[in-house]
Length: 99
Image (tube, rainbow, N blue to C red; front, side, top):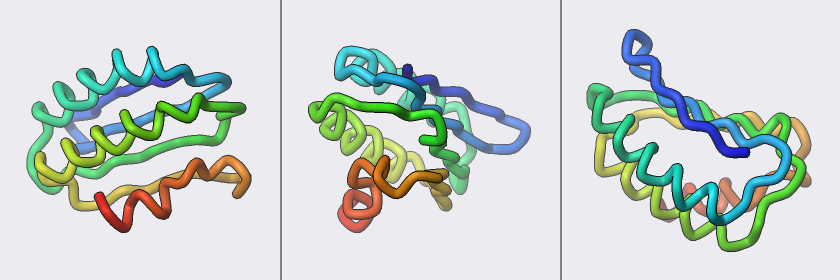
């Protein structure tokens, strides 16, 4: 499951990755990421929670990369990633160097 939520009062976009995340889910929600980011003020923050992630299809990384590009264009200021199990870091630390 991949869920996207925005809290306009906190200028915060929350991305939750849980259980199994498919490429199809990521593709559908990538548009939601863009739409909700457009509703936030520049300087917004992103909370990416991978606490309950069990597995993710490899093609999801392309959708994550695209979302990172959108968030950068919309003016994200801070990204906080919650990854309690380092084995579940799907390459976000490396991706963040380039996006």
